[in-house]
Amino acid sequence: MNNKYRPITIDIQTCLGQPCIRGTDIHTRIVAARFAAGESLQALAVHYRCSLHTIEAAVRFELGSVAQRQELVEVADAGPILMHGKWYKLDRESLRW
Image (tube, rainbow, N blue to C red; front, side):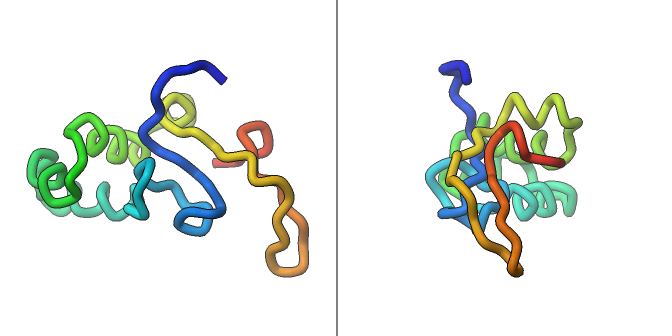
């Protein structure tokens, strides 16, 4: 993985593996839903105490294509996890959108 800063993370230890803003428990889907409901990016940035760039990334992640998502997200390699009686491995190579 390159050293480019990625504002969105997917980590089983944070938000149960759901996409969220790095360093927070703010789900990207909630940010995008509020934007779709008419809130401005600036208002969301103030509310969540995040940079405008980070809020834009959360919205672009939820509304973007697979290629755009992969540019914004960092997937934590948490090793295998047991869910519903089945083992899963969460990493960039096995992640399915």
